[in-house]
Length: 255
View 1: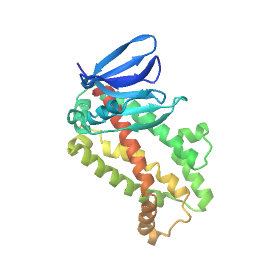
View 2 (view 1 turned 180 degrees about the vertical axis):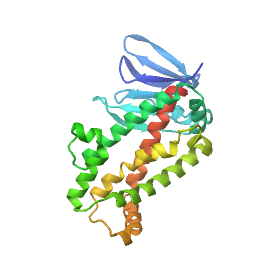
View 3 (view 1 turned 45 degrees about the vertical axis):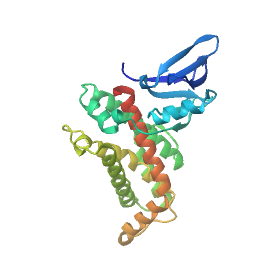
View 4 (view 1 turned 135 degrees about the horizontal axis):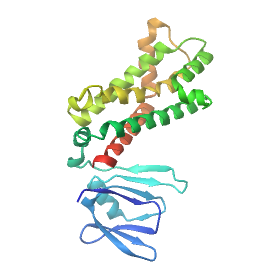
Protein backbone atom coordinates (compact mmCIF):
# COMPACT_ATOMS: atom_id res chain seq x y z
CA UNK A 1 0.00 0.00 0.00
CA UNK A 2 1.31 3.47 -0.88
CA UNK A 3 1.54 6.02 1.92
CA UNK A 4 -1.26 8.59 1.86
CA UNK A 5 -1.89 11.94 3.62
CA UNK A 6 -3.92 11.81 6.82
CA UNK A 7 -6.28 14.75 7.34
CA UNK A 8 -7.40 15.42 10.91
CA UNK A 9 -8.22 19.13 10.72
CA UNK A 10 -11.96 18.60 10.40
CA UNK A 11 -14.45 15.95 11.40
CA UNK A 12 -14.67 14.01 14.64
CA UNK A 13 -11.01 13.30 15.46
CA UNK A 14 -10.21 14.28 19.06
CA UNK A 15 -6.92 12.63 19.99
CA UNK A 16 -3.93 11.13 18.18
CA UNK A 17 -1.94 8.50 20.06
CA UNK A 18 0.30 5.52 19.42
CA UNK A 19 -0.79 2.00 20.37
CA UNK A 20 1.29 -0.95 21.53
CA UNK A 21 1.70 -2.17 17.93
CA UNK A 22 3.23 1.18 16.92
CA UNK A 23 0.16 2.20 14.95
CA UNK A 24 -1.42 5.64 15.01
CA UNK A 25 -4.52 5.48 17.20
CA UNK A 26 -7.17 8.08 16.35
CA UNK A 27 -9.91 8.60 18.92
CA UNK A 28 -13.11 10.01 17.41
CA UNK A 29 -16.24 11.45 18.94
CA UNK A 30 -19.21 9.07 18.72
CA UNK A 31 -17.30 6.84 16.27
CA UNK A 32 -15.02 3.82 16.63
CA UNK A 33 -11.32 4.54 16.94
CA UNK A 34 -9.10 4.16 13.88
CA UNK A 35 -5.68 2.50 13.84
CA UNK A 36 -3.29 3.18 10.98
CA UNK A 37 0.24 1.77 10.55
CA UNK A 38 2.85 4.52 10.44
CA UNK A 39 4.22 3.40 7.07
CA UNK A 40 0.78 3.99 5.52
CA UNK A 41 0.94 7.73 6.32
CA UNK A 42 2.92 10.21 4.21
CA UNK A 43 2.00 13.39 6.13
CA UNK A 44 -0.57 14.63 8.63
CA UNK A 45 -2.68 17.77 8.40
CA UNK A 46 -4.29 18.37 11.79
CA UNK A 47 -6.28 20.95 13.72
CA UNK A 48 -4.62 22.93 16.49
CA UNK A 49 -7.34 21.59 18.80
CA UNK A 50 -6.32 17.95 18.21
CA UNK A 51 -4.81 16.36 21.32
CA UNK A 52 -1.54 14.74 20.20
CA UNK A 53 0.38 12.52 22.58
CA UNK A 54 4.13 12.95 22.90
CA UNK A 55 4.79 9.38 21.80
CA UNK A 56 2.68 9.81 18.67
CA UNK A 57 4.51 13.03 17.83
CA UNK A 58 7.93 11.42 18.39
CA UNK A 59 6.96 8.43 16.24
CA UNK A 60 5.95 10.75 13.40
CA UNK A 61 9.17 12.77 13.63
CA UNK A 62 11.33 9.66 13.73
CA UNK A 63 9.39 8.13 10.84
CA UNK A 64 9.77 11.19 8.63
CA UNK A 65 6.06 12.04 8.72
CA UNK A 66 5.62 15.85 8.64
CA UNK A 67 2.72 17.44 10.53
CA UNK A 68 1.00 20.60 9.30
CA UNK A 69 -0.99 22.32 12.04
CA UNK A 70 -4.07 24.30 10.97
CA UNK A 71 -5.69 27.03 13.09
CA UNK A 72 -9.41 27.59 13.55
CA UNK A 73 -9.36 30.16 10.72
CA UNK A 74 -7.99 27.59 8.27
CA UNK A 75 -4.52 29.13 8.14
CA UNK A 76 -1.37 27.09 8.69
CA UNK A 77 0.13 27.78 12.12
CA UNK A 78 3.31 25.77 11.57
CA UNK A 79 4.93 22.44 10.82
CA UNK A 80 6.70 19.68 12.70
CA UNK A 81 9.41 18.08 10.57
CA UNK A 82 11.51 15.13 11.65
CA UNK A 83 14.13 13.00 9.95
CA UNK A 84 13.70 12.39 6.24
CA UNK A 85 12.56 9.01 5.03
CA UNK A 86 15.26 7.60 2.78
CA UNK A 87 12.69 6.31 0.33
CA UNK A 88 11.08 9.74 0.02
CA UNK A 89 14.10 12.00 -0.40
CA UNK A 90 13.77 14.95 -2.73
CA UNK A 91 15.93 13.12 -5.26
CA UNK A 92 13.64 10.08 -5.35
CA UNK A 93 10.48 12.18 -5.37
CA UNK A 94 11.84 14.12 -8.35
CA UNK A 95 12.81 10.91 -10.12
CA UNK A 96 9.27 9.57 -9.80
CA UNK A 97 7.73 12.91 -10.74
CA UNK A 98 9.80 13.51 -13.86
CA UNK A 99 8.99 10.03 -15.17
CA UNK A 100 5.26 10.74 -14.90
CA UNK A 101 3.57 11.98 -18.11
CA UNK A 102 1.41 14.32 -15.99
CA UNK A 103 4.45 16.10 -14.52
CA UNK A 104 4.51 19.01 -16.97
CA UNK A 105 0.88 20.00 -16.48
CA UNK A 106 0.85 19.54 -12.70
CA UNK A 107 4.15 21.35 -12.25
CA UNK A 108 3.03 24.20 -14.51
CA UNK A 109 -0.09 24.76 -12.42
CA UNK A 110 1.87 24.66 -9.14
CA UNK A 111 4.52 27.05 -10.45
CA UNK A 112 1.92 29.56 -11.67
CA UNK A 113 -0.03 29.43 -8.41
CA UNK A 114 3.08 29.76 -6.23
CA UNK A 115 4.36 32.64 -8.34
CA UNK A 116 1.05 34.47 -7.94
CA UNK A 117 1.00 33.85 -4.17
CA UNK A 118 4.60 35.03 -3.72
CA UNK A 119 4.01 38.11 -5.87
CA UNK A 120 0.91 39.01 -3.85
CA UNK A 121 2.93 38.75 -0.63
CA UNK A 122 5.72 40.97 -1.99
CA UNK A 123 3.24 43.56 -3.30
CA UNK A 124 1.71 43.73 0.16
CA UNK A 125 5.09 44.09 1.91
CA UNK A 126 6.06 46.89 -0.48
CA UNK A 127 2.78 48.72 0.02
CA UNK A 128 1.70 48.34 -3.61
CA UNK A 129 -2.09 48.09 -4.10
CA UNK A 130 -3.05 44.69 -5.47
CA UNK A 131 -4.89 46.00 -8.52
CA UNK A 132 -5.64 43.76 -11.52
CA UNK A 133 -2.76 45.46 -13.38
CA UNK A 134 -0.35 44.83 -10.49
CA UNK A 135 -1.36 41.19 -10.22
CA UNK A 136 -0.96 40.77 -13.97
CA UNK A 137 2.51 42.38 -14.04
CA UNK A 138 3.82 42.39 -10.46
CA UNK A 139 7.44 43.09 -11.41
CA UNK A 140 6.48 46.20 -13.37
CA UNK A 141 4.28 47.46 -10.51
CA UNK A 142 7.06 46.84 -8.00
CA UNK A 143 9.72 48.54 -10.11
CA UNK A 144 7.46 51.59 -10.44
CA UNK A 145 7.06 51.65 -6.65
CA UNK A 146 10.84 51.42 -6.17
CA UNK A 147 11.40 54.30 -8.59
CA UNK A 148 8.90 56.48 -6.74
CA UNK A 149 10.59 55.80 -3.42
CA UNK A 150 14.26 55.92 -4.42
CA UNK A 151 13.94 58.33 -7.36
CA UNK A 152 16.06 56.09 -9.56
CA UNK A 153 15.84 52.83 -11.45
CA UNK A 154 16.53 49.69 -9.39
CA UNK A 155 17.04 47.00 -12.02
CA UNK A 156 20.75 46.54 -11.33
CA UNK A 157 20.23 46.43 -7.59
CA UNK A 158 17.47 43.85 -7.92
CA UNK A 159 19.61 41.74 -10.24
CA UNK A 160 22.62 41.79 -7.93
CA UNK A 161 20.58 40.83 -4.87
CA UNK A 162 18.62 38.18 -6.78
CA UNK A 163 21.80 36.48 -7.97
CA UNK A 164 23.01 36.02 -4.41
CA UNK A 165 19.72 34.39 -3.43
CA UNK A 166 19.59 32.23 -6.55
CA UNK A 167 23.12 30.93 -5.98
CA UNK A 168 22.33 29.96 -2.41
CA UNK A 169 19.07 28.28 -3.44
CA UNK A 170 20.90 26.31 -6.15
CA UNK A 171 23.43 25.12 -3.56
CA UNK A 172 20.61 23.97 -1.28
CA UNK A 173 18.88 22.13 -4.12
CA UNK A 174 22.13 20.40 -5.08
CA UNK A 175 22.62 19.35 -1.46
CA UNK A 176 19.09 17.93 -1.30
CA UNK A 177 19.08 16.06 -4.60
CA UNK A 178 22.78 15.25 -5.18
CA UNK A 179 21.94 14.79 -8.86
CA UNK A 180 22.27 17.89 -11.06
CA UNK A 181 20.60 16.11 -13.99
CA UNK A 182 17.31 16.18 -12.11
CA UNK A 183 17.52 19.90 -11.43
CA UNK A 184 18.53 21.35 -14.78
CA UNK A 185 17.79 20.19 -18.32
CA UNK A 186 16.51 16.76 -17.36
CA UNK A 187 14.52 17.25 -20.53
CA UNK A 188 14.38 20.21 -22.97
CA UNK A 189 12.85 23.30 -21.42
CA UNK A 190 12.97 22.06 -17.83
CA UNK A 191 15.27 23.79 -15.36
CA UNK A 192 14.17 23.64 -11.73
CA UNK A 193 17.11 25.74 -10.58
CA UNK A 194 16.01 28.54 -12.90
CA UNK A 195 12.28 28.20 -12.15
CA UNK A 196 12.62 28.15 -8.37
CA UNK A 197 15.36 30.78 -8.59
CA UNK A 198 12.94 33.16 -10.29
CA UNK A 199 10.43 32.53 -7.52
CA UNK A 200 12.90 33.28 -4.75
CA UNK A 201 14.18 36.37 -6.57
CA UNK A 202 10.78 38.02 -6.17
CA UNK A 203 11.68 38.59 -2.53
CA UNK A 204 14.56 40.84 -3.60
CA UNK A 205 11.95 43.50 -4.33
CA UNK A 206 11.03 43.65 -0.63
CA UNK A 207 14.61 44.21 0.50
CA UNK A 208 15.42 46.74 -2.23
CA UNK A 209 12.23 48.68 -1.58
CA UNK A 210 12.96 49.00 2.14
CA UNK A 211 16.71 49.57 1.79
CA UNK A 212 17.79 52.86 3.42
CA UNK A 213 19.77 53.78 0.30
CA UNK A 214 20.82 52.44 -3.08
CA UNK A 215 24.48 52.15 -3.99
CA UNK A 216 26.16 53.77 -7.01
CA UNK A 217 27.29 51.33 -9.73
CA UNK A 218 30.89 51.09 -8.51
CA UNK A 219 29.68 49.93 -5.05
CA UNK A 220 26.91 47.63 -6.22
CA UNK A 221 28.60 44.32 -5.33
CA UNK A 222 29.57 45.41 -1.83
CA UNK A 223 26.12 46.93 -1.25
CA UNK A 224 24.22 43.83 -2.37
CA UNK A 225 26.36 41.49 -0.23
CA UNK A 226 25.93 43.71 2.83
CA UNK A 227 22.15 43.93 2.33
CA UNK A 228 21.86 40.19 1.76
CA UNK A 229 23.82 39.44 4.92
CA UNK A 230 21.69 41.83 6.98
CA UNK A 231 18.59 40.01 5.76
CA UNK A 232 20.14 36.52 5.95
CA UNK A 233 17.59 35.19 8.44
CA UNK A 234 14.73 36.32 6.21
CA UNK A 235 16.33 34.73 3.15
CA UNK A 236 16.75 31.44 4.97
CA UNK A 237 13.10 31.53 5.97
CA UNK A 238 12.02 32.34 2.42
CA UNK A 239 14.05 29.48 0.97
CA UNK A 240 12.87 27.03 3.61
CA UNK A 241 9.25 27.91 2.88
CA UNK A 242 9.77 27.57 -0.89
CA UNK A 243 11.54 24.22 -0.64
CA UNK A 244 8.94 22.94 1.83
CA UNK A 245 6.13 23.98 -0.53
CA UNK A 246 7.88 22.31 -3.48
CA UNK A 247 8.49 19.09 -1.55
CA UNK A 248 4.89 19.00 -0.36
CA UNK A 249 3.78 19.41 -3.98
CA UNK A 250 5.91 16.40 -4.91
CA UNK A 251 4.69 14.37 -1.93
CA UNK A 252 1.06 15.11 -2.73
CA UNK A 253 1.30 13.63 -6.23
CA UNK A 254 4.19 11.17 -6.25
CA UNK A 255 4.77 9.77 -2.79
